[in-house]
Image (cartoon, each protein chain N blue to C red):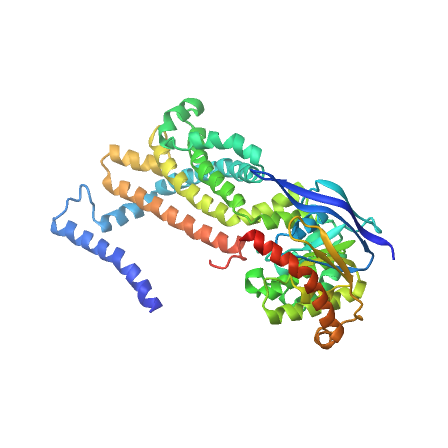
Length: 260
Length: 251
């Protein structure tokens, strides 16, 4: 399959008072079209920085980052942010339609697309609600609907479920997989949860503690469509979690040693 | 319980009025300084029948509205721009910080000198009073908007104007409304002062003229009407707030 996202020798460093801090160090990676790619790493490994560079919210220091464009009308990316990111002053509907409105898509088309994704996320009957009337899980669904509705070349997700409780997390992971199966867009998903990574991903990139480098890339050959509960019973799932934990373990310890 | 609490709130002013009325009638306080509420109401009826009251109220209201728009709209726009752009904020902040502490009433002679005795000087006074609270609250309002919302705007391709319209303005709106409320209070203070000097209409003029004629009842009518206007403005703004900011949890 063709390459969709290409990183070559990507580096990012921040100047700080005493020294220059390297967040990402020489990362090279090819993600092919239609891949659900998950990046796992200990906190502070620069994975969020990597995603912010992908989203165009942060500049890289050196190296290359590119997303291959297939359709000029599509935006390059749309991001599902960590934590609350839907506008409190807009209804669920207006939040989900935000990207389309900013792109000047016709109102008829907006209606069609937004109602589709609000329906898929179970939010259609809450269209007129404001975010403060919704639970945390529902707010994150709006954020997911907003990103999917914008129909980007690449979807970026920055620990979208980290603020949710275990049950909500499971339900939203399942919903995400279901919606993703429709078009199989290329996804770059960040998490610190190994379970989540194996559950969702086709390809898992393990990063080292700061500076962030690639420690290992693991292909997940679990069949799709996936049923999350069934998946957990699969011995292969356990093996993969164990394998990835093996890579991550040393990095988490290193990050903790540095912090203390 | 709720009804009872409301009742307490009504009782205290009524009690004050009753005590006042009785004290005047018994002769314990001088009607020269504190005319009985009943005679103030009488004066109110007389002034509104003659059309004099409405003439003065409408003159003040017109100045308030013009001053409000002329001072408030630029303050709102400039405030949002300052909130969004750090260089512009750093450039303009010292100007505001250094002129804000000047009592606006102390500027009246200068304003009269520049704008003359006509309408413009009154409007200018109100505009100045409204400008400061609106701009300061708007800047604070934009600065307190969580950064993530600007990230969302940028990520979803919002232009500068769209960031202004869809993020900065609604995000700062609760603070802007507070600024407007403070601004209207300041406008009422300044219009009363401005009309006392070199005006021939308005509530301030009415009060000042009554003082010169030793017509104490009319003075009280003027105070009463100003208080009433302030009360009505507050109600209207609360209603406006409910309508403009339906997304707020606690209104």
